[in-house]
Amino acid sequence: MNTVTLHPGKDGAGVVRRTVLPGGLRVVTETMPTVRSVAVGMWVGIGSRDEAPEHMGATHFLEHLLFKGTPTRDALEISAAIEGIGGEINAFTAKEYTCYYARVLDEDLPLVIDVLSDVVTSALITPEDVESERGVILEEIAMHEDDPSDVVHEQFSAEVYGDTPIGRPILGTEESINSLSRDRILEYYRAYYRPTHTVVSVAGNISHEVVVGLVAEAYERAGALGGDAVPAPPRLSGPGVSARSGVRVLDRPTEQANLVLGTTGIARTDERRFALGVLNAALGGGMSSRLFQEIREKRGLAYSAYSYTSQYADTGQFGIYVGCLPSKADEVLKICREEVARIAAEGISAEEIVRGKGQMRGGLVLGLEDTGSRMSRIGKSELVYDRLMSVDDVLARIEAVTSDEIVSVAQDVLRRPLTLAVIGPYGDKDFSSVIA
Image (cartoon, rainbow, N blue to C red; front, side, top):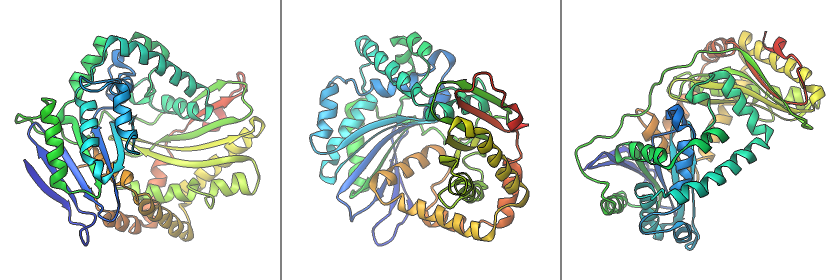
């Protein structure tokens, strides 16, 4: 085993350590001695963007199936084991990774590691479970389709990235889910759910050595530990995506129009991400932002208006979302275009920079006050970054953002070709002038 201290922490708290077990399994922990809980995550470095066309939706399908049963536990026993001690267990699938996680009292750490390890390493994936869960996922897709505020973001991604893995929906489609066979899903599971692609992250009132011992025991029982394989490298690159311009309109008889206007952003490891974060806070990151003030406070045109950024290994998104009355869409989009153009040309004010930095700093620190967020930070970082920045390092980088950096990233990102996604009762209305 190879153990290193990634961050020394202060006064015994916040110490982050990593051990690589035989076979390439990584265990990363952060000590939080003043709490009584622990959060455990099993992070697998596979997401929906890794799917071949014939596997579309398989990553999310697997997320469901892994809770259906193992040789030692059925579905009820998996959930009851955690819920019976007052804990919570769940999972999520993203574009570039999947996570299975639980949060329990510190005294129940051995049980939660055993259950999650069992789920990740030893899922049965029976034909009966595949057919049962197929119906559940189709219901999930239908439920998702009934929420236009979700669908509009999916449509925006599809228009920005085109017919590429990163542009396709994480859930898959009704057609792709119906076409996935048990053999194909099992093939996907065996190919990617390996120790080399897995990170176990734990945060809370724990001892690193105890966590490593428990994980090693659980994986040895599953026959999943051993050998001289090394961990898969972090996902630092990809094929890249060029900025696209287009309009996608879904005509639906909704009471509210849902709009997303934006373009490609920057990659996860791009140093400009801190400057873009400050810019985003000023444009649409809260109630004091330009968009909220102009669209809601001054004109009363919408209830919800915000901007956002998201990053992947090789690309990202920068978008503006607004939900408004269908009759107000043209006026709202005009304001969005004007504010984007103004920031691209002038940057943001000194007052907005101070406020944006404060918003980012506060959001970071306040968001890391529970074991679940700490677990997520160290687990995700191990998969997708080449190093784990300390919280202090991140705060310092935010504070160091300059006006020139903000102007530079604004002139790059905000002057790229724009894409618009619209859901509302618009028939064949032409929105092409919005992005011209």
